[in-house]
Length: 328
Image (cartoon, rainbow, N blue to C red; front, side):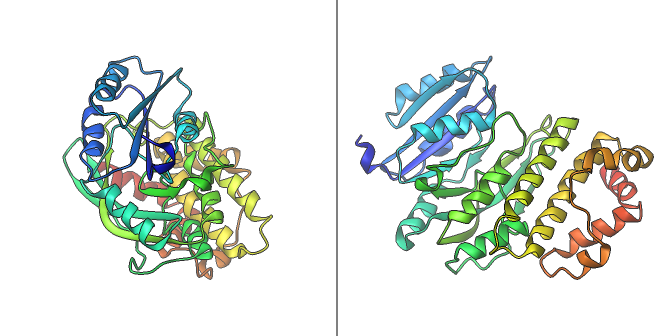
C-alpha cells in the first residue's frame, strides 16, 4: 500500500483490554473504507491484548502494530502519530467501538469541503446497567466553521476536548503531540489544534460509542487526577494570556467550565465531606485564577449550568447536592 495514497490513519492505543479489543477492532475493519491504515499501539499490556493485535494483523494488511513498554495514553498516541502516514488521523480508545459508517461519513465530509477537522456526537454506553446517553454537540451541523469558532466552542465546552470523536488533518500534528504521564492530556492538545484549524464542521450523529466501564477514572479518583486536570487548565490559561486575539472572557469561561469537572473529582476524592473540601480547597486550587461572582454572572460565554454550580459552591451547597445525586 503506497503511503502517499493513504487517506486515513486510525490510531488505537492498547493496554490490558483483552475483554473489549476484538469488538473495537472489528468495528473498524467493518467500515466502508479504502486507502487507510490501523495503527495498534500496544502499551506494555500484560494480558492477551498483544496476541489479539497480532491475530488481526495477520488477517488484515491495513493493520500495523507498535509494541512498546508501558508509557501511558499520551505516549501511545504520540507513537501512533509518528508512524501515521494518512492525510487524516483518527483516534479510538481500545475499550470503545464505532458505528459502521463513522469514519466513512467523516472522511467524505472532510474531503468534500477540504476541512481540517470533523467532529461527531458521542453515544455513552454504561457497562454496569446498559444505559445509553447521547452527548450531542449543540452547534448547527449544517455549517462550515472557522478558526475563531472552534476556539470559542472549545473554550466554552460546547466542543469537548475528547481526542476520539474527531478526524484531524495530519498536518495539525506536525509540531504537536499529547502530554505524557498525565491524565486529561487531550485538553491542551485540543486547544492547540483549535488554534491551527481553519475549516471544520460537526456531524451530529452519535457515531462513536464510549464505554463507561465500572472501574474507570470516575470511580477511582486520586489526587493526581485532580492535580493533572488543574495543570491542564493552568497551561491553557497561560497560553491564552499570550494570545491577543482571544477575548479574556473566553479564558474565564474555560476556567469556570473545567473547574466544574475538577470539583466533581475533588468532591469524590474527599468523599463529599464538606469540611474536608473547603479546608483543602486553597491547597489544591491555589494556582487556579479567582473571579468575583459578578464577573461570572455577566460573562456571556459561560454556560448557565456552570454559573449555577459556581454559585452553589460558593454557598457551600454544591457538595451536598452532588452527594445526594450520587446516592440516587
